[in-house]
Amino acid sequence: MWIYEKKLQYPVRVSATDLRMAKFLFAQYGGPDSELSAGVRYLTQRYTMPISEAKGLLTDIGTEELAHWEIIATLIYKLVKGKSPEELEKAGLGAHFAQHDTALYPHDAAGVPWTAAYIQVTGDPITDLYEDMAAEQKARTTYEHLIRLTDDPGIKDALSFLRQREVNHFQRFGEALRRVQEYLDGKKYY
Amino acid sequence: MHEYQYKLLRDIMALDFTILELALYLDTHPRDKKALKDHNEYVRERKKLKEIYEEKYGPLTLAETSEYPWRYIADPWPWEIKY
Image (cartoon, rainbow over all chains, first blue to last red; front, side, top):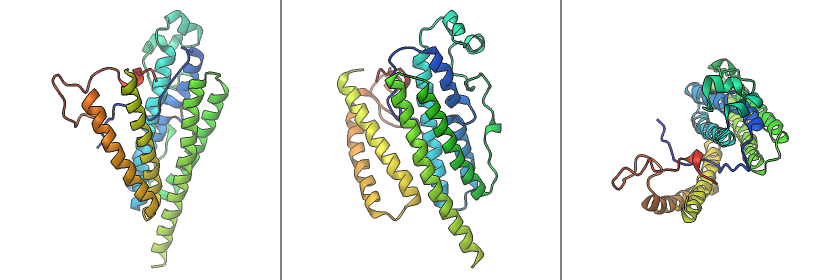
């Protein structure tokens, strides 16, 4: 089960509304390497992990990804607040407005809706953990692209925090992978 | 949001982050005594701060007692706060 806590994991500050950046940030809200993909990927993989370390880590990182999803949502929410349909259209968000107003529908930076096809859950713990490590690197790269697209110190700060989390998660998944490998090797030579 | 409320919330957020980071480490290093000791200390500190915050400004989670009327839904919600 889950319990909601009424706070963000990291404070989100923006200098001003910015529709251009809001559009780009959808990459991490509903794109292939988004926080949503990360959360769903880890929280579905955890059931078939063979050792408690990996079950725990996927549960806890999966849950943290949902908190990151909330941070990205907060960034977009603040960046589009009070903007008119005309302004949205000029920034390339006219189609978004037609279907969703300024609501936070999960799609990528180009408007492509989120799909479970972005993730994989194979039931093979080695395969799944390698996918997770690759996913953390892909998200890190996306954050680096996004940081290069803005001068807003508040956006940069939040994105830098999220970028660093990808690095830390990659480290932890690598450790879990080694533990699972040891466990599987131990079983073979019993 | 009142300045003191914000300070308390920020302190809780910082402690929660520390606790999470130690917990992820402990997930893959469950026998690291130093990390476990640090984790437990931060958890105790967080409990104290959370109690002070919720007494003054209402519950952060729904499993807390509330004065009348139900204070959990009091504005602002996390995405509305001017950090």
